[in-house]
Length: 138
Image (cartoon, rainbow, N blue to C red; front, side, top):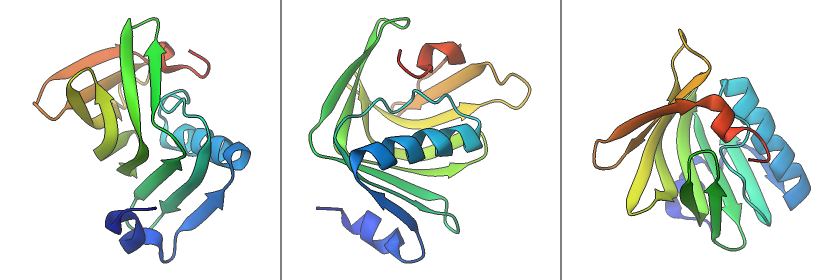
């Protein structure tokens, strides 16, 4: 069941259902935004939506997902609902993604250095990594 936040952005959104098309559309959106295509290595995706007007994006998956980014030696937890507001090179107000005990709240690629990805947590901590760490299949 989608949250109230998702429902409030559903009108006028591009919505896709089914794991295969949702994975494809998620990767396509990340590519258009200039973000690493492997940021959301989720399984059993039921729905993906993007409201172009507000920049709101959501991914609904059947079960929570734990993924190890080996090059970072970091485990990331994806809830059944992941949301964010997106714009070129940036995701803000991210919900449903945790790194250890911290919630990830922002991801961005600096225009001057597209091969680097900066991740901010809800505590204000930020870390910059090579974009290749989040390549598809990592």
